Length: 439
Image 1 (cartoon, one colour):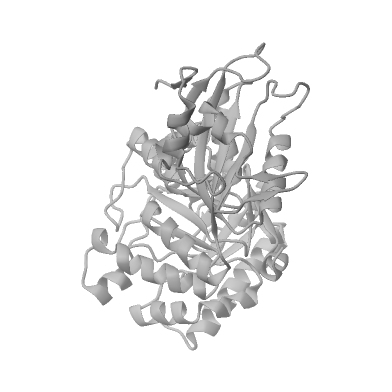
Image 2 (tube, one colour):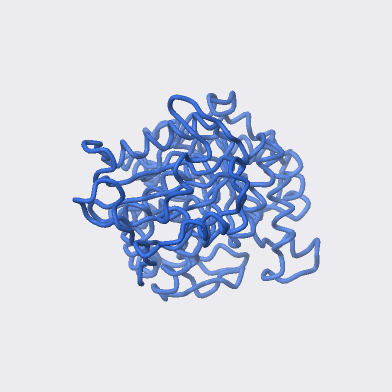
């Protein structure tokens, strides 16, 4: 565990762990408002919100943040009743259908209370517990993590950084006094809230100073007006500007970024992490299940893997006949590509930990299992120990591995056999026992 991770600890959120310091986590934004500043408000279209969340999950988001009240400059406040009316139908569907933790962006205690009852996993308070006096107790009673953002109704500061840090210190104190666990607190300097363009740029330059608070830092710059003013661009054209703020923010200590453009910003995070936090290695993993809800098992395994690695691409699901022990149900298999800074033995231990947590019980060799996670390739490493062989010893013999692998990486070369995945699959010949799962 890195020194930064040891200091900031681990925040548990739903079925995930945010292990601060190991990598940058990505929060995808979903606005169920009619008047979002960024032009992405979905109103009350629940299906569109669910579809967007699932798309973000596939693009590398670690958590989804749902907001039902616009906080853009000049926007009109909405009542708690209206916010709940917009929010709950979306939240209930997301909790049921999306494998990622769900956060709700609200500063109203009653909205938070009902969202928590609906199963959300985090609260994001843009007023840092200072707007609604009941909010701190509601969050503390839930045991959920909370994001405390700095905000104020004017742009007057005696000393910008000292004032913002002290205000966040007060928010942290409010949370702790109400009974919120230290590990459940995340701080956000509030880019664009009660600040001028010059203030926002100064905070970005000096973001590392917020480390004095001892909690992970969330950075929310996505498509904001400061970027628009610097570049002279409308919200939908601020992707590059957002990328610049995120890359610099990570270099200055950001632990999580809140973004609209998940696919692009996940890539920015991976590249920035490789520079700032250490070398990232591309790995390919095989996943299989033939017990219970097989598709849900694979989705859960991918969600758990994202705790310590970035998942960049996932193959289609394939129905496959069992190999070895035949007296068992057919498997559902997939292959994913990701990047990690875990060593091979650490990645193996993490995979085994996930299998155990998901109830895998080995009673028969090659027998039924709720989830199976195999390391297929780890960069171009060739290694063999008592516990681990890379590349996987039998991947060149297994159609249920080669077929999904050829879908996402046909030209990937086996470092020991000196053949591409496409060539290995061609040499295998018969793949009749592997069928792409129909939707």
